[in-house]
Structure formats: C-alpha cells, structure tokens
Length: 214
Image (cartoon, rainbow, N blue to C red; front, side, top):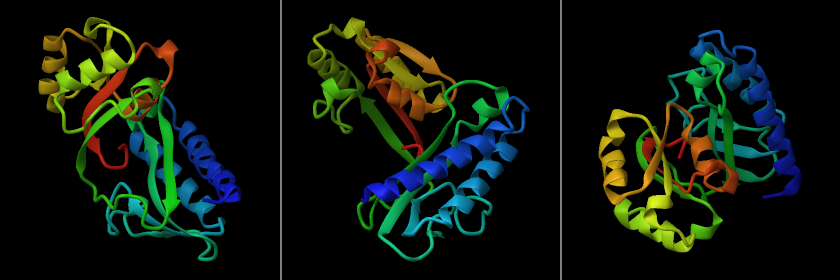
C-alpha cells in the first residue's frame, strides 16, 4: 500500500476520534458511534482510492454504519479492502473511560478476510511470542508456549480477557493452568495492543468477539 495513502488514512481515524470525543461521558454510546461513523465516511470520500468494506459493523440496511460491501473513496486510485470499527468501545466513551479506539485496517484488494458480522476466536501476543502460539491449540498450551518464549513460568503469565459470560470457560482454564488474569470490561483491541508493551504487564489476550474488533 502506498505511503501517501497510509497518511491519508490517519485523517480518517483522527476525524472519528474527535467526533466521538464530543460525546465522552454523556452516557450516549449510540450517538458517539454515529458521530464517528459519519466523520469517517466524510473523510473517506476525499481519499483517492477504490475501497470496499469487507469487515464492518453491519449490513447495507443498517445505516449509518459503514456496512459490508460499502464503497469508500473517490473511486480513483488503488483498489483496497477495508476493515473498520469507528468506535471500538462505545461503552467506554459513554462512561468517559480509557482505551476506546477508532480502528481501521486497509490492505490491497483480496488480502483481507471477507468476514461477515460474526463472532471469531481471538488470540494476541507480543513480539517475543510471534509464531509460537496457535489459535487451534488449547488455552493451556498457548499459555505454556508464551511462557517458554518469554522465559517465564506459567504462573507469571498475565492473560487479558474481556469480562463476558461467553468467556467463562476461557477464564476457568487460565486459572486452572496457574496463570493470572486481567479482566477488562470493554475495549479488547486495546487489550490486544497491550500485549506488545512490557510496561502493561499483559502477556497474552484470549477471547471471542465481533469481526470488526478481530
């Protein structure tokens, strides 16, 4: 992807973040999401590209979302696939909390998984454990793999998990394996990013969630 396009896309997430921020702490998560979505769409329309949303938050009849199959850009320029979530963490914005994000991923056409609005398994690690984990392996095996890669014992590994009922089995297995858990209420994209930085104290993220966040 062209460097100039990359810089243009920064304006998209910036516009979404600024628009959503105006609703911070007002208890109106849908309004924050709508504002970020419209801001994103407005900036996208000025960018020289032929973009198509392949991972979004809704289907065509669910406006104002950036829907799967929506065309973005001026229609001239590189053909790209787009994955987008205008506000990842609408509850966070509504409550005036931390770690809400405007999320955007772009790749050359055909290089992003065309995922409908569905739930997916998630796992994320930092650079030391890249290539050591396996999405099809058990939670316990992945904890052991990360511990080995980081030269730690499993009891020193901290796993981040979104505090949801659907993760009850994951949480139980992490504890049975002897690792520790950092439960988060919202914002698992930020939780995934935390695995890349030593000062966060998070070694791995597990979960199941929507395609836009994955």
